[in-house]
Length: 137
Image (cartoon, rainbow, N blue to C red; front, side):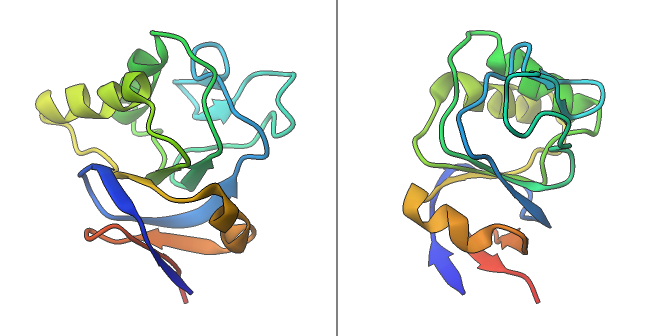
């Protein structure tokens, strides 16, 4: 299984257990930048760890601080292995861009149709340098 995705922010290709979020999330207050754990008690996947996983985001709940949280996750070594978004979120992705400008190794972010997200649920997913999203074997 492979899908061509649009590269939103180039970075390190990533592989890890797929975490397909069922609802959008706010990074500000919703994700702990020290642990990479979903901290929002109202989120259905509260307690899940995004660190080192391929994170499939059906959407984000806006806050201009989301970029700072993502940048902190990168700096703390708790970022996802890769981000797969349904729709680009310029504020969130700014965190990757700034982290890269700081000289930190950043995961790549790609855009993929949301209808394809469930294909990756309960798999190990890989996002290649060319943007291809595959189930790792």
